[in-house]
Length: 93
Image 1 (tube, rainbow, N blue to C red):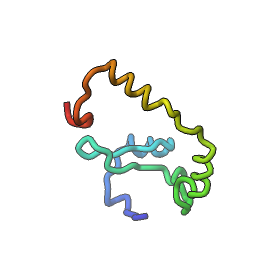
Image 2 (cartoon, rainbow, N blue to C red):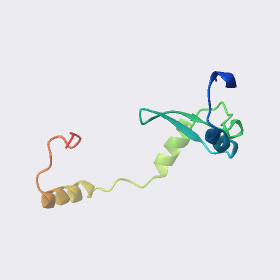
Image 3 (cartoon, rainbow, N blue to C red):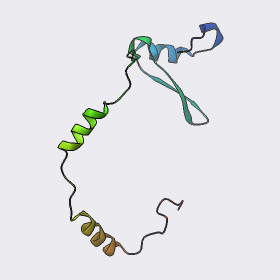
């Protein structure tokens, strides 16, 4: 983790107060999230990776319900009632 001195940045009072209340503060740049200011006590301090190990994930998948063999037929029936679909459904409209 990088560390900087407080005098190197200007943090507004409302941000300092929000962090003191243990609220995360999202800093945006050009309307996009750039970084988050988090209270040090709320920061996750574990060094283990997030998520589950592969063995546990595979065990969960093995216990999951099997796929519905009639799902494709149901989807085709629905699409037939809707009409023609766009060639590229992800294209800008």
